Length: 162
Image (cartoon, rainbow, N blue to C red; front, side):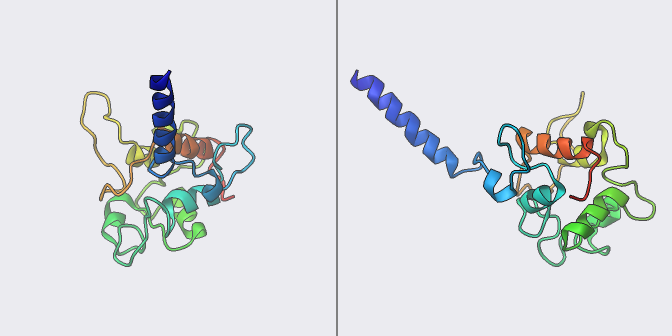
């Protein structure tokens, strides 16, 4: 009986510890856009705040000279993606791209996993190969399956600026 209590207490401690690490529930910070199960929001504003924006976990444009803040940044030359410093500019950068570059989220994308954005964020190894083209490149954040599901839902709903 003492063993069961210790295991139970250890489980509670582990659960509490995990709530303060990378596996935390960010539904309040990201906003809940009405998901039936209380899941974090999948609107663009939620995704921008959670991941891509200035304060996002994988900020594309956090500091001057970053990868995607301005058209002169290094990351723009290869991707054609300029996030800028606002949610609107970042959305436009993802859905419109720069001259000579495809949009990261092309209009009418039916399968989110086939978009350039997905290819850049997904950390799994492609068929028969090693991990490549993973963002953020400084590995400051790794997109989880839950993160990718939120992004996938947004893309598959037409990637609206909402």
